[in-house]
Length: 403
Image 1 (tube, rainbow, N blue to C red):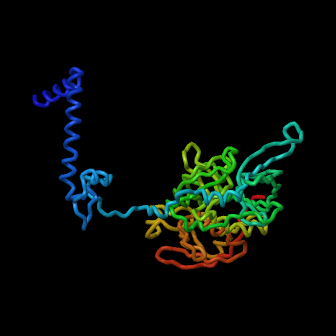
Image 2 (cartoon, rainbow, N blue to C red):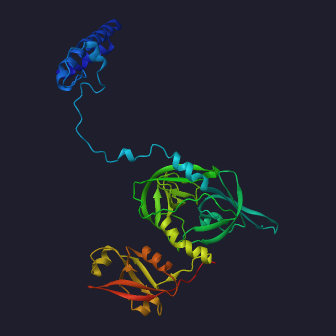
């Protein structure tokens, strides 16, 4: 009954005559105006709302006290806190970084000419992408898919120059290509260290999405170690260890630099997740740096192989093989007479390191073995039952190489 009565009273005041509602509103306003100074005066001793500090007298007038009243008057002082993000290290603007880097970024126009279905000579396809100068003597990095099968390549710079470019080296399986223009003294971007980049670090992408040249976007590093299982439509024989970022990457951004806050390249923007917002992928620059000597020398990557088929070590297999964790590459099959067979590696062995580098899974082993070198010998650490030991493997050549 009491709750119902209260509801009826509230409905009456809300819907009663207009003059009554106005009188009620005025009464509430008057009570607030009279009560507020009294409340502030009562609290002044505790919170020093007048602004009078130690060693000062309270001879100042009430008008002066009101003028000196801080915005937080009447609120208890906040306790000490340590912010999770150090604001003094937070960039106020990316403008200086972009101004320094943008002149090294180029728009790539890739044209494929040839005979069409009717046998007539002409332009078969045209594409746009991005590249960036990494060596002042005219060397640029981009994606393989940006210039794949192109017969004419032109790169355009921020200052308006357009230069013809040729392919020095390209690798489809990592989607990396090196271009060369006949120019020197070009502004070059330094190559950084993608291993030092942490999830949550700021990154900046520069490129030409949808033909909108020199577009800048910023975000954070969202994840590391994304593989072909995480990005649909990639070459199943490829080698991928992507950086994931929420900096906007769109068609046309491919081949552009992903930069850290020092203006160093930490990745080459390469792929996007279809039907997703702000999920882009970049090739880590440390992978690129391992490929560069091979691409510059041979124009392609001649890959070495260990001669095994490996898979992830699942919970069931780890238990069966006596492994304490799921790290390592589980050997499912061996190429008869191949490098691993000759070295004594057996089915159900678990490869845990290659040349002293830990092998967390099959993708790491594939990468290490592929770039070690044909005919080179590598030390491979194995786990077999309760034993762990090393073997020497002289690597062969990976078959079915791309032309």
